[in-house]
View 1: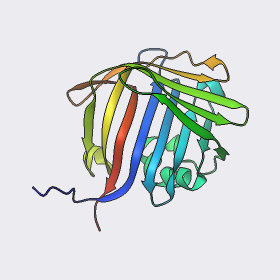
View 2: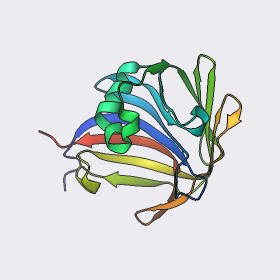
View 3: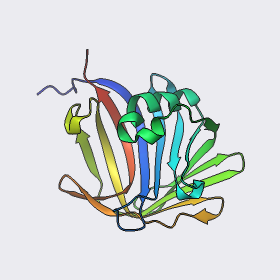
View 4: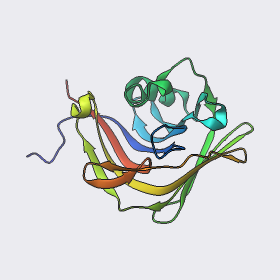
Length: 192
């Protein structure tokens, strides 16, 4: 087997997420997808896609590079969560900052006008590498990522805290959760 993956690189960076539920994952109350893009054809930057009870069930897009946000909507988020792929949503200018890292607590702070959002992960499980080549799960593109699943996570916005909790789930044979730091993430597409 050759030491080089045969696919074309779409982007590389991070895509950490928090999904919360009031009932152990039967229903989802909050979904946040945080991107730190180191490289993609639209450049680099940060994006937060947020669908939350803290927004009254609305969807918002925060970014420091609107071109990256739109590229993610068209290329990846349309496959992951179609509500985040709606390009009619305005891209709200924001600043992004990370604190900490596993195995202690990690937080991402997003500041946009009067909005202050804090995503937090802690009590992480053993990390693992997720390997989903193009075609896996009927997706035309693939992803390789290092997951740090968190047993505990929280979303705070302007002093209010979402009431849902992350839930445990399996990814292959590894214990994971609905709240993961997903670092060293690379998305690929088959070469033409």
